[in-house]
Amino acid sequence: MNLETMQGVTLAIAGARETDEVLDRIARGVASCPNVALTRIWLIRSEDSDRGPRRWLQLAASAGNLWSERDDATRLDGCFSRFEIGERKIGRVAASGEGVLIPVLGDDAGWIADPAWASAEGIAAFAAQPLIARGEILGVIGLFDRLPISDDDFTWLRTFADHAAVSISTARAFQELETLRARLERDNAYLREEATRAEGPMLGRSPVLEELRRKIALVAPTEASVLIQGESGTGKELVAREIHEASRRRERPLVKVNCGAIPPDLFESEFFGHRQGAFTGATRDRIGRFELADGGTLFLDEVGEIPLAQQAKLLRVLQEGTFEPVGDETTRRVDVRVIAATNRDLASEVEAGRFRADLYYRLGVFPVLLPPLRHRDGDVIRLAEHFVADAARRLGVPRPEIPPAQRARLERYRWPGNVRELEHVVERAVILARGGALAFPDLEERGAATELPPAEGTPAVASYADLRDLERALVRSALEAAGGKISGADGAAARLGLPPSTLASKLQKLGLRD
Image (cartoon, rainbow, N blue to C red; front, side, top):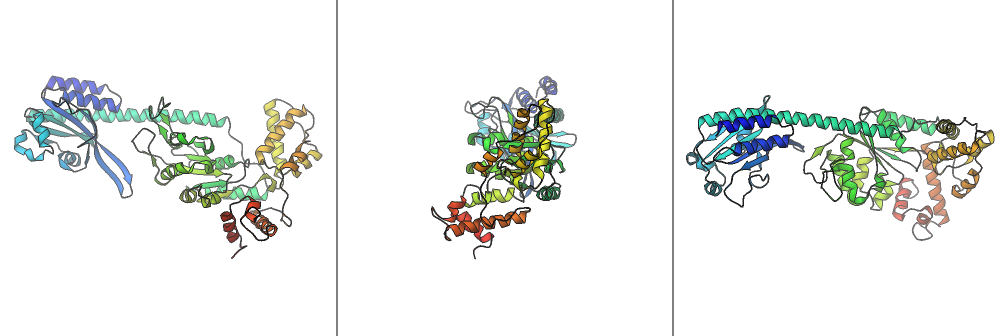
């Protein structure tokens, strides 16, 4: 080996900052020495599996001066790109931390895996040294030489390997700092964006809302997945925020994904990220939502809209906590708590074959049912007054009063759009009031068009038990109107807008059929 060449390589790698650049400079530098045919660097990789942690050696850099035009010295795949720790001489170097020297190949020809290749390339000797930094074995550097390797050369390779290992370790530290800096920037940007649209706390003191708060207090400190179900506009994102803020993950972001707004062909990129050039339009690397939520909470809004073909990919990361970005073979591991929300009946979707049962059970460890606004006794006026004050502040107008007659009108309306509809109605009324009293003249007309008349004998609703009774009464009423017939155009299922199989299941659950 050439001493001056190796000294120059040592200085060159000391100035590199990226791990790939350091590895490339090491391999090319050693390969530039006279008579070196091939230099390779294997680094130790690890992953968690069902059988526990696994470690192996993976080829990370390669360079050389091969005689065969068919062989590419820089290839990182193919034969001998991976060794188990302790396997063959390379693996034993990693296991023991001791170097291996075959000064003259003829003295130990049996060790080489491909004698024909060694003969064709004129290989005369082999040496390998562990890459050790701060007491940790990072990998192995090996070289194939066309001349015998002396003990002095082997000693110099040991010294060089120590310098190289320190440079690799330093580059990794720089990359970790850069990754942390980039992550903090992403988190701050996301949190700033979310802060501009974050909702306030849940308002109201109705019995059903107090029951909801009790459930939130129970599940928030746990790591259980939560499935929030309820009509549109009931505040599912607000409940997700309450759970997150009361959890141990509150110092990390709550990241929202609107599953219904993701095109099927962009699902993997949105959730798992992608590398530059992975597909047309991927002009830069992109971090996915799972990685952005690492350590925090991921809120999957409208989870029932995820196409069936994509649900298996979501299930895998929920079960294993691992994924690969599009265009990247590196497996990433994340620690994410998932809160999902939907206005669909996912149980019915499962029965209809539109939603995976295993994903449904994985998401619904702790189901939470949000009550519609019409079942939150007394909360309509409390919310309306809050929205009046908020709208007046944002619009820069005096806060108007809600006259008693208009209060009664607000309470009579059925609010099919729930809290979101109430907020919009109030803001429109504040704009039209021009500083005077508020009025809601169109509510009764809108209510007549949107409110569904209750079935005869339907009980009043004040609790979740009452909701069950209401469902039972509606189903019984539909059965009676259909003469006990379930399926068909005039059957009870069609009257209720349900698949016949779903209605049959409900009859069992409600105790209306044996």
